[in-house]
Image (cartoon, rainbow, N blue to C red; front, side, top):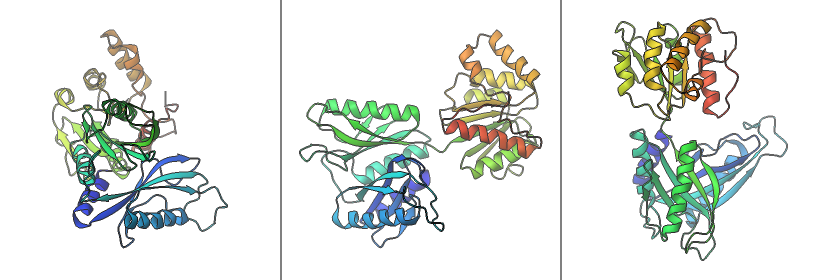
Length: 367
C-alpha cells in the first residue's frame, strides 16, 4: 500500500489527472480484496490491478470515461457467469468498484483536495501510523457533501478537510475510528447528520505494512525472515549475539538489531501492526521478553518451545500477575500443527498461523 500511495503522489505531479478504481465491496469468491486499487492514466496505462480478465477491462473502460468526463462512477463487476477455462480470474463473485478522478488542480469546497489526501496517506505510511481515508461514493443531488468528497482522519482522531456540518464530522470520526480499530476497509451508509442527508461512503483503513519482529536469530529465524519478506512483511530481527544478528545472515531483513533483548523490547514501538515471534535460545529470555511485550497492542504474539517450556513460561507470567486474557493471547507452542520438523517447515507453520490471524481466522494451533 505504501508503494501505491507513493506512486499516486508522483503521478499527480506528472499528470493532470489520474483515475483511481477501488474495490469497495465484494461478495462471494473474487480475485481482489476490498481496498484493492488500480490507477488509470489518460492513455489507458494502469498501475495495480483489480483482478485482471474481462472484469478489469470493463473497469479500465469506465476509468477512461471518468477521466474524460470528470464524474465519479460506481461499477459492478459480475463474475458469476460461466468461467472460461482460459480466464485468469477463476472466481464467481461480485465486486463493486468506485472510480474517481483525482486531479492535481482540484480545489473542492468540501473535503480534501486529491494531492493533500494522497500526501497525508503517504506520509502516515512512511511514519508507520494508521490513517483513514473516507470517500463519499453516492449522495443525493442536493447534498452539501457530493460523491467524490474525501476526508482524512489521523490515528489520533483529527479530521482533515473542510466539513459542512459538525454532526456530519462526528459521524466521519466514528466511522474512521471503527475502521482503524478493526484494521478493515468497508463500505457503509452514513445516516443523516445535521444539514447533510444520508450518504453512501467507503472508509479505507490505510495501514502500514505488517511488521514481523523476530526475537532470536537462530536456525528457525533465517527461513522465517526470508518467507516473511516474500509475504510483504517488514522484517526486523533482534538478538543479543552479534555473530547471529548480522545483515549478512539476514539479507532479506529490513533491520537487524544486535543488542540486549529486554531493554530493546521495552523501548521498541510495538503497535497493532506488529507481529512478535519469540524464538530465543532459552526460556529465561522468553519470560523477560513476554513480560515487557504482553500488554502492548500487538497483532500477534507467539513463542516457540516444548509444552513443558511453554507451561513454565506462562506459569511464571500468571504468578507475576499477568491477567489470564493476556496470557491466553500468546500462541504457544507457536505455529499450526502441520507436522513440521525442519527449520523451514517450522517457519512455514509459524507464518501460516500469522496469516490466518491476520485474515481474522483464529485456527487450531500446535498446542
